Length: 370
Image 1 (cartoon, rainbow, N blue to C red):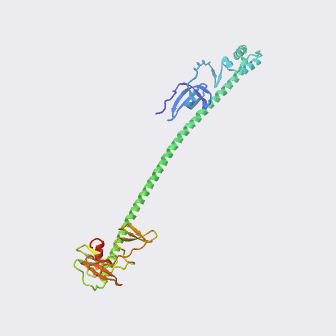
Image 2: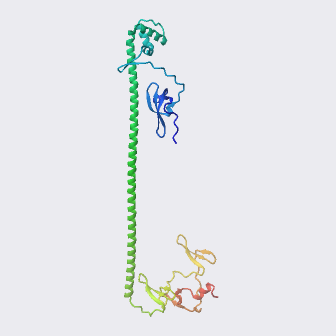
Image 3: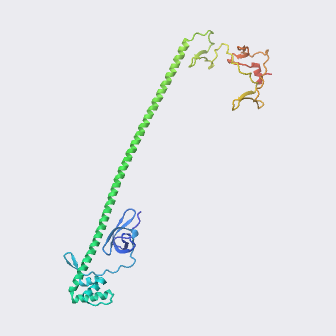
């Protein structure tokens, strides 16, 4: 809520004219509120008016205002005011009074009291009114110039205030129009940016969808080409010399044309052709480790050996496990074969697997036999 005004129209106050230090008596003629401050139009007792005076430059009267002296009647000859003799003489300065008495050859000695000088001047005027004509005209001219200067100053002040008010109003209108235009331009730029962003998102979405469709078609085309190539290779491959496959088995080929075999009954696959001897496993670089040992390597790649039964490690490769007795019989489904170097290995025709270890020895290591 706005602060309440301390003064109202018609209040007697004292104000600092144009911010000066001295306060002058006057009266509030009008009040204004700008939204932040209260401003007042003050007419001073000397007739000068000042507009838009701040509340910090006004105070209540410190002493009671003296009663206004009754104005003496003035007679007007055209635009020039003619003062009465009493009014004119009373307004003379001490110097002018002494000069008048000197011209009238009236002794005044060392009188400094203005009232006594005024009384002597009035007695001279009563006896010789013509002597007061020239001083009265000079006083009238001086008073006229003083009043003219005050009027000009008041008019200039009011003109300046009027110009200031018009400037503030024009400035407010220009700023309001400029802010409205600026807001409209900002809104247009924001809408344009949002439109461009929306179009960019739509274009990116279309490009991503098109790329996904293209990749999908390319993948389908590659898979189709691989299937056609595999079928051509399968058709062009010579017939195998071996006999037919056991029941429930079927030969198929992968993407590279390599054959593999599917058992539809057990739903298993195998790289080895059913009914044929499985290929010999590749010969290891070294003899197999004894049961419970495992070869590992450190950060530099150097091999070391771990015994999981005794929880120990060794840099030295342990001796291979002793070969199983040659006379030990093979379990059912197993068959002994030899590789190109004559080393024996064992084939399990049931599981289609091979092993370098005799099945009986493997069973003893697992605890399955003596």
